[in-house]
Length: 241
Image (cartoon, rainbow, N blue to C red; front, side):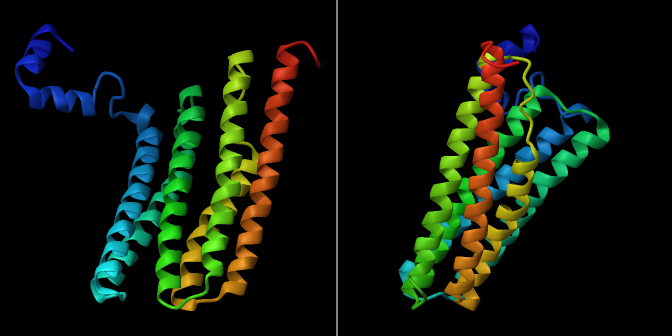
């Protein structure tokens, strides 16, 4: 940013706000950052889906039933979250295709994966509550809470050990492993499938099957990541060769 631009920013609050929201010097729109912007798009779409589910719940609470407008908002929210989930796969492909992978991306992408998971769980919980209040099975709320609990515990453990490993060995490889990719391949579509299982299908038994698959692969991924990062830590401290 030039001296003249800085002076303009100080005089114009709108310009200052725009530079706060987007600093072209820090993250320019170019080929090297294509994958990062796709990741950001996916995260934003996932959050948008959650915000729309909040509106969906408000409309249901106001009218006491799922009116046509609320159903339309729900469909748009699900589409936004599906496209957001697709971005999570596209960014990795673009990164490999353009050979623009970086240590920044190795930390940046998993962080936004957590955002996607969290917003989907909150949206799923809203969906489950509306389903139960509309006469659906209370089991859907329990299933959602189980999926959210084990997933969030796994994410906390993996991020904690990833950060710990990087502190001990700054050059350690912390990109997603096979178990993480397997988890994504099962949990993202599985979570989206849960929306359909709740409404319009209302099939709690199928919900338990999908919940079991999601929780199982989440526990496996947690064990694998913690094991891998602790090995990095032990090697860095000389406990293991």
